[in-house]
Amino acid sequence: MVANTDRALSRLHARIRACTKCVDAGYLPSAFPIVAGNASDRVMIIGQAPGAIELTTGLPFSGRAGAELRRWLAVAGIDEAHLPYRTAITKCFPGKAASGAGDRRPSPPEVLLCAPWLDAELALVRPRVVLLVGTLAIERFWGKVPLSEVVGKSRVDGERVLIPLPHPSGASRWLNDLENRERLARALAVVRRAVRRLDNAGSAARMHRST
Image 1: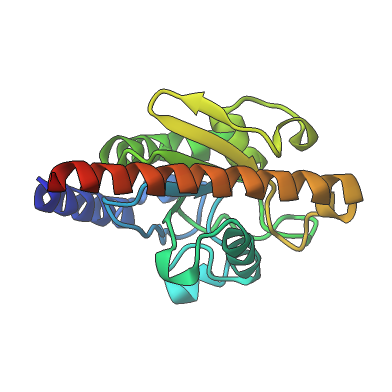
Image 2: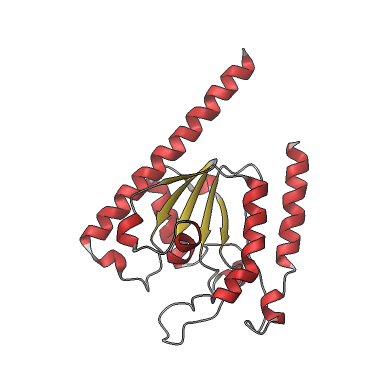
């Protein structure tokens, strides 16, 4: 069963990496979809889109924002050796914002074109904890709400728990506010508790099988 799921995820990743829908529709000059993770991952990170550095590494969250996110994960008890499944609302680098500050926010048509890939990932991996990184991911699963209203909270969505986080990009000024940094600290504590529950449930299941 596990081997079958692994093979199915490998096939899905191959299909995602071959996708040119946004190029064909004229939204992007070229396609380079990026995704990483395993079928056994119980935690999934969903960001906005890959950045420019990911075009060279081929791995999600490998730039400066990714390094900051990994520092947050370490605070929450998730170390570098156990990084979760990593994906995004859209799978290709959207290019720089016209203002020059950060990357361009993918348009609603791009989000719509890429949505079936994310739906397929969720259906196959079935993560128990989903970290929604940034407003685009939060809007997709939680609704359009201010970050200050959701960071530090969690919500049960079927068999998974949704936990919103701000975007770790240096272009974001949201974390310049002390109250927002405190909200982030509360959010990371929520992540830590959720991951511990997963670990405890896994230990109980292993003990049950051994008896």
